[in-house]
Length: 132
Image (cartoon, rainbow, N blue to C red; front, top):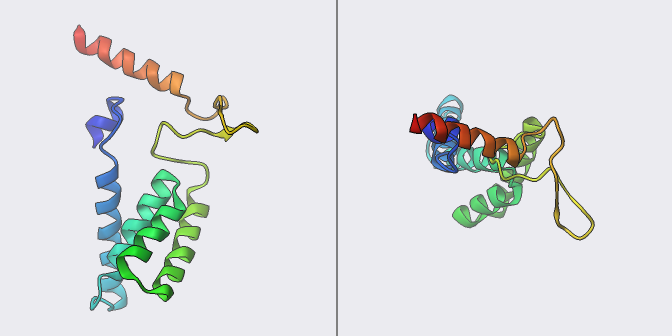
């Protein structure tokens, strides 16, 4: 994961987020004494993925499809909503667009957010260092 992220690669984060969330969910389940189900690890994985990639509905749907329980789906909706607030504007994806125009086309990133051009620049610098 570190090699992919800091080397300018396009992957290596999904599994790390999912497993990290499962671990945190299991720790919370142990602390609460609620280890009889796998709900907390599932919720942790869904929250980490939803927060990391900024895809809240996908996180909620992961829990809804995995459990089939409407009450647990509502709990996941609240948990994912809290995670979205905590994440602010951050994302683990360098392909995230800050805004879209009226037609739905991506708008160029602002100067305070990482842009694809800066990411491409890092990748080309990493490649040139690797060649020398």
